[in-house]
Length: 294
Image (tube, rainbow, N blue to C red):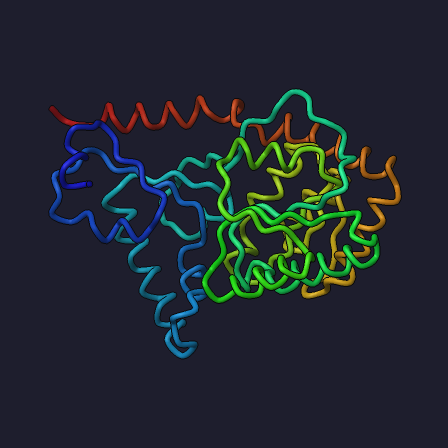
């Protein structure tokens, strides 16, 4: 696709760092790498990579990043990513369009939105759903929205057969957000991994943009948002009992969940609304396109 299409455009915008390896030798326009993760840390989460090889992989990815910085334009999705690069690059947070109004978080369901993997808390997610279902006699459902890695699909399928949760798989964004809105809580049970420590989980901002409380593990940026804006509950890593207890507390206390949902939604409108960041993003792409020589 790059070989046949890229030369017909003014700017090539990449998210996946793997695509950087395909660029040499191709007739390309200006290239922008939109950095959405700690690439070196993320590489160590690959299940196919033997643990002894992971330090070498981190070093190799770091070298590729430094080479990319010299060859393409960069936009960063997190301020914490600046330390990985020699030059200063524009930071445009990875946020979403926030609706002006959202329904109250009163529907008897808990949601998880995003890819499902072991490192993202798949086991804790299933056990939390099992505990919530048992404690509410099935009144509160857990809905999982997103694709799953091959090594956790069997667990999700079994949990669905048991009636513990409903796994929808991939759902288009607009439909997914319709399901999220109105839920009593959104789960973000990521593990304490290097890649997650420097990023604000996208699902956290999606939950607060939808006006629902967040139940999250204590990753630094997630904790900062949830505790700073009083829009959810922080629970320990690998503790589904604590996550389930937080959900049950929110289900039992309508005033609490509505207050947290409203606080998070107000914060999302003020700080995490794409309409507040879109202009600088588009301006940067125009600047890059304008730097092309005839």
